[in-house]
Length: 194
Image (cartoon, helix red, strand yellow):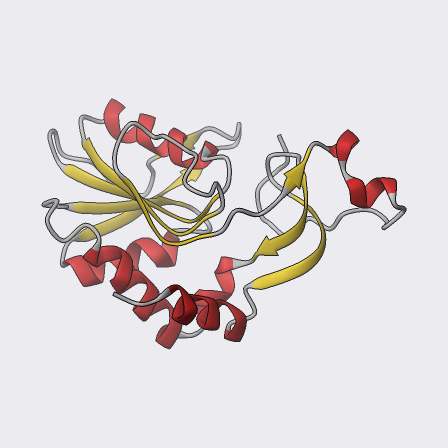
C-alpha cells in the first residue's frame, strides 16, 4: 500500500495538481484542478497508481475493467494489466450518449470494475454503470485514482480510490473567484459542460 504522501508526491511530480480558476464539466467552478491525464504520460506513475487501485479489488473476482473515454482509456488498460483480465472503454455517440462500440461486448454475469481517473460528480461513472448493467454485466465496484468527493458519493457498489481530495467547488453564480474579478475560468477537461 502506498502512502498519501507518496501519491501527493506523484501528483505534484506529474504536474497533475493545478491552481487557478477552473470550469468543471459539472458547470461548477473551482480553484484547483487535477489533470490526471498527465499521470499517463509516464508509466512509472501510472503503473504504480493503477497497481495500487487493482490491489484494492484483488479479492473481488474482477473479469473486466471498463472506463469512459477519454480519461479512463489508458487507466482501464493499466488496471486490467495488474489484475490480469480484459479491458475496454465506452465512448459517446454523436448525441452524447455513452455506448459500447468497436465490437466490445460484456458477457452475461461478467464481473466488471468501472474505473475513472477522477471522480467529481460521478456522472460519467453512473452512465457506464447503467451501460454495464443493461448489457448483463455485474458491476463489482468503482475505482478511481482521485476521489474529489471526499468519500461523499455512493454508487451503490464498493467505491475505492487511491487518493481522496476534498476540493472546493462552487456554482458559477456563487464563485468567489468570479466575484473577485479573477477573470473567466479555464476549462481544462475534454467533456462538454452540462
